[in-house]
Image (cartoon, rainbow, N blue to C red):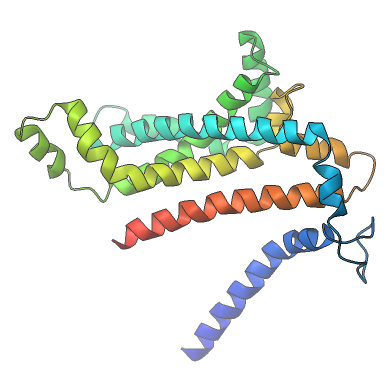
Length: 259
């Protein structure tokens, strides 16, 4: 038993080290005065942050990413909740096919998704616009929101809605006063998680963004042709932003699962 516990702990430490070591290394080098990532390190500096965020295009890209992430997360959460509630409340023919289609986007290779979105948004005249990126990221994020909302709905007593109806509440009043408050932690969690997915997404955004670049697309453009420590600085900010959203989402999920 003791050996199994020690092995599990060692395995978790090794796993997290393997995953996060490159990220931590990039963060460390973002404060290194040397241009190239070499050991031993040079002196501590914030020069690369100052240089990166003195560029107007960096602020523009961050603004684009924040707008897209907020809009895509709001739409993904709304669609995910509606889909999850339909699955929770109603039984109908072809329901398995309905759920399979709702959960399909994450299984599609991102290159194929990007090409499909480029062709479709091009026909709608939305290719190269922030609206197009929002639509693409909503399609990608809605299944994640649905999974989170459905998990929360599975913890709700179905009799709560019936009790509200018996007390004279309309279906919309019941939704507003019973279902949504019960699912609020899951809705906030879904919003944070899908915002993180949108903020980090690169491949589909690269296909459909055009001149309206998001941060991951801009990082690729900086990276092409040379090694620039500004990438480490920008990447650190992106990582901390995404991790904050993911941690908030996980804390809400774990807190409500424990209650």
